[in-house]
Length: 122
Image 1 (cartoon, rainbow, N blue to C red):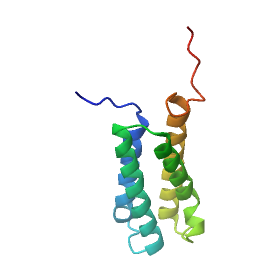
Image 2 (cartoon, rainbow, N blue to C red; image 1 turned 135 degrees about the horizontal axis):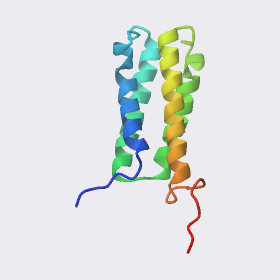
Image 3 (spheres, rainbow, N blue to C red; image 1 turned 60 degrees about the horizontal axis):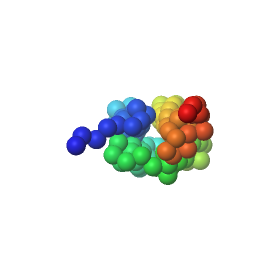
Image 4 (cartoon, rainbow, N blue to C red; image 1 turned 45 degrees about the vertical axis):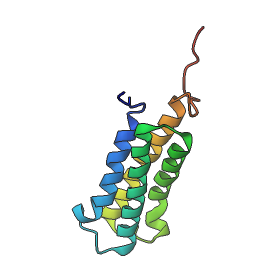
């Protein structure tokens, strides 16, 4: 029996997580330890959660991805790499995308939240 993907957001978050994982080397900020460590650790967690979501959708995984997205958004200031344009912009853009995709999945899937779903008529 083939598994059916429930959310299009999950493979997108998988790609975003993998991008965060490799972005220090692609964008050339691997020598900046705080930015590099943040990108690798958060990227791995986002990718793992998104991969798990491909097989079984749960609300907690989406909420964790939302929190990780918010963390990426604020991490340049918390970890003090906000003056470095490339890693800061990367973290902020990917953080916004991950958070929005997680909330979108939570809001539209009746099995895990679905507050944006239209009521069904019976």
